[in-house]
Length: 243
Ligand code: BTN
Image 1: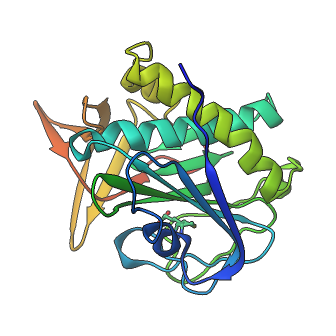
Image 2 (image 1 turned 180 degrees about the horizontal axis):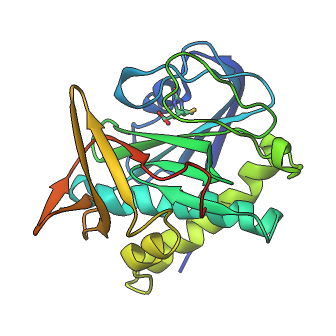
């Protein structure tokens, strides 16, 4: 199989790498990476701001992907971030948090924003706190950085490590050689623990029973298992316990 050849575009400053990546979703069959040293309008999930200080990593992948299999793309990207950290610092306490976050020692080190691109393209925007852990009033969850945990790398090196890991897993999944959901779950924080899922005004409490084949969250409440498609998860026990 031909290895994926990524077309990489690197900028000093952009509004949002997700918006820049949109501009490259023209001809079919491309694999685009847009990276910026900083963003002036970095955005997170649910309309939140993503503070984008130079030294951290901000990039977006644009690739053709079946919208119906979006869950697989989320899982591939999350696992590739996790594996990249493990490759740089093998004993790292790194876990996945539903839907799109990566935690290091129980605090958020990476967030991802998936958006539909033109045609058959999907855009996966990834922010990794390499050097700084910006906190702001909008942040729902404690943030950390690789540097704060003694993991020293640069944004450029992290991306260079990430791309082959993501590419190999994408090819393996497409070839039917990678069963993503069990692998994602094996690396997820607090499976079986009590969580709260906040969606706009509503809060649902239950047990994090896993994820289904479309990467929806399964929340067990009494005798029923509820499928949750969107929301913010909070762990109900002590936050740093057991990660
Ligand atoms: C979140 O946790 O809410 C998702 C954060 C996603 C941030 C990344 S940084 C690169 C890309 N460009 C953006 O504007 N957002 C994503």
